[in-house]
Amino acid sequence: MSETETKVRSSLRKERQGEVISNKMAKTIVVRVERRFRHPVYKKVVTAFTKFYAHDEKGEAKVGDLVSIEETRPLSKLKRWRLVKVVVSNTEAA
Image 1 (cartoon, one colour):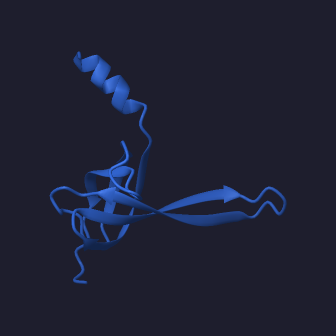
Image 2: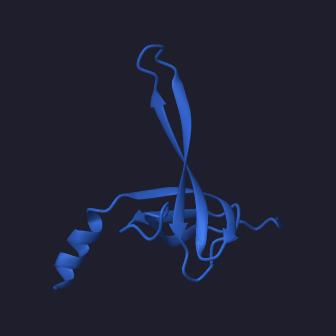
């Protein structure tokens, strides 16, 4: 597989940014992703949150970190995402 094919294949995967809300499981983090949209009837901007279970092989993400996750093959019953990088590290002690 050439380098351009690899880049094209990985660019088709969905990416999300969110805050780590739990890292108590082995090699798994829970990421809360925020999305904002206008309500179809009332036209008010609504904020909705979704929790994603992501694979963290090295255990580098901590609670409160802003992370980037990418869609991947199913890794377990709930895990369909993997950690790409820690965007902003949380400096406060938990």
